[in-house]
Structures are given as C-alpha cells and as structure tokens.
Length: 77
Image (cartoon, rainbow, N blue to C red; front, side, top):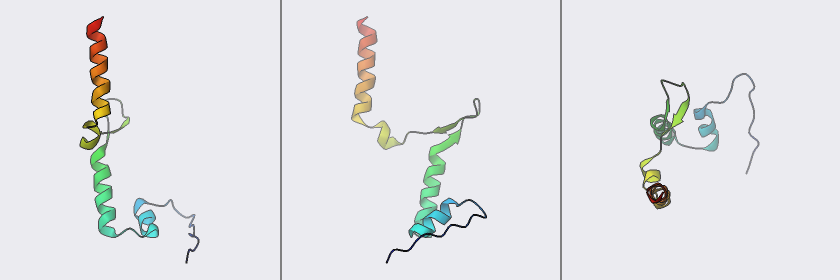
C-alpha cells in the first residue's frame, strides 16, 4: 500500500536518502554515485561543472551524421 513520504526539514535530502526512500539497494546506489562522479567534473579554467559524454552517446549515428554534414558544408564553400 502506498504511503506518503515524510519530510524532515532539518537538512536537505542526500542522494542516499532519496535512494533509500525509493527502495534502491545500497550496492546499486553506490554504483550509480560512482558512475555520476566519473561523468561530472569541474573545469579548472572556467570553474564550470562539465558533464562528459559517455561512450554510448559518442557512438550515436545521428551525432556522426551532423558532424559529417557540417564538414561537407565547409568544404563545398
């Protein structure tokens, strides 16, 4: 049976708190946290937070098609 999520306003919820409430195992929670830590980093020069593209995204055919089209346009000028 569904029950309402109680809110404790003493501190903000952490990733682990949210995962526990949603029923995600500790092992899977730690795996997801490590995955995200590998994807996100802070640019040392600008200080902005940058999300690295994963290998599966870089192998996307549509991305390659866009790059190929832009190269063709430049060479045809």
